[in-house]
Length: 502
Image (cartoon, rainbow, N blue to C red; front, side):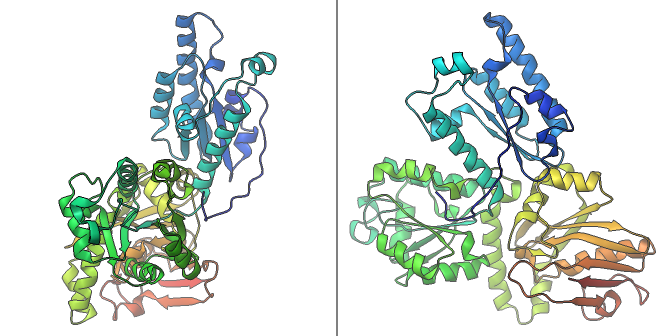
């Protein structure tokens, strides 16, 4: 269930029972699939030929040990989904071992047999007759479940991520009306407990939680203060709109405050009228109405594809803190007499350094974001970032920023190459949270310093407008900007020129 991206893919099947051959053969279907997704289905029972249990375990162990390096060699700049299918007897320990080994591998996503059974339980998994006659081990119902979860994983790799969940309060976070029942009179039953636990997990994975409720702030936050049985705490929230305005107006207000597009919002409410109002006035928002039967809430949430997130970076885990700090910065900006006073008061610290392997997930994530300052809008997976930096003559720089309000984390990326007399920029992007603070100028200045040190004449930055943005042509001299911008200092009048074009 997702109102977001529609994914159209062409499906090709590799030869039967040729997993290792496909991974190791450079001319195989998997090896040639540079831009798509490779799906590998693994069933441990197929990796053991002996009926003797001890020998069977040894055979599986050897195949697992062989599979991991074969997959590592095959990944390169490709995306893989490895799905462990159930088998009898249960080999859960091998499933956990394989998933653990693949956890840190870039561009590899794992589906465990237990995930399939948890998300889509079926009454009968195995089909012994079909297995014996045609090596077709499962029932049609289980194949449907298997295919659905695989489709969810593929969808999550292709769509833009959602960033904000906007939650109603009465009859959504709890049963009852806080203004009438009071904090201690509300019911937080098992389904609503499950909903709150689910939302906390989403927050810890990097999504921002906001409240939108027709209430008095004092009444709502009295619930948070007095109900110790609430998994959702006030510190999990980044912002809120508690008033009697239309919820579509509140959504637009929050989007402006957080500087995020409405297409990155999920709105959750129990009221059909509120949902219709938001759908009518904020069609870009993914609006979800909770089921009237509260017992269905946990299963409902489990089947919303918009909540799926494949991997979590350190920056994801700190996102709520980052946005809270940003709100403090906005307050300071309004109080400062001039913009120069604002920048000086931030006490900004900018660190620009070469990218390390541990930063690959975050760098890839930044290229995928739709609301970043991004000159070329080139999207890359982790494996693709590694590939262009190792196989192509591209150098990589990452930018980390902090100020007196806190740490922004890794917020900028530059990928570039040195040519005969110029630096050609492949990727230049910066998180929207740090725009307007001079960081982008410091990044350009750093490129200017590199060009000057290498005695190159210019820096070239291709500018490819995001779809729907009007094209423009930009050029400026770095040396000319020195007198007007305190962040852009690269040397004397002989400094290289910067050219940007589309």
